[in-house]
Length: 217
Image (cartoon, rainbow, N blue to C red; front, side, top):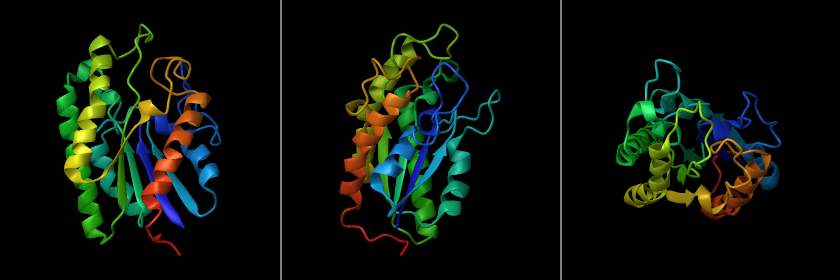
């Protein structure tokens, strides 16, 4: 059995757009992916609302991926594939980060993942996914602004460069998800967006793992 960790933010968690609820498991993209892949694949959800690559948030504590990645990976060992999709929350206006600084934070996070794999003597594949860029029609009370939108548009190329630098897999979620009718709040996928995401990432995962022997018998 292949073990696949989905490490991300509210779009991996399955936050309902414009509400505080959570989509049912079968509608969230990890749940849809599990159904598509079948019983030979274990999908592990590690989505957190507000999660950032490296920011300690005094208003919403516990969101810093740097602080959680070690125990997260070690508790789910062994893994065959680690999917990382973060960066959307890092562009919040109050954080004042550039897209380049977010890329640097992601670089450190990926280095930490490598550390764990060395400690645990494992060789999991890593898939870095650039999130779908924010849309312009954000709610007025949102923590995001026009500069945030622009930064998310820059992340795909920066993440692509980072993936090439580290010799890991890369995918751009914007090639799977049409945000015009799947992100009612300009940020979070609805059930249709999750379906599009799952259908887009499914063949990517199959290709990555096609020649890899699973850690679990």
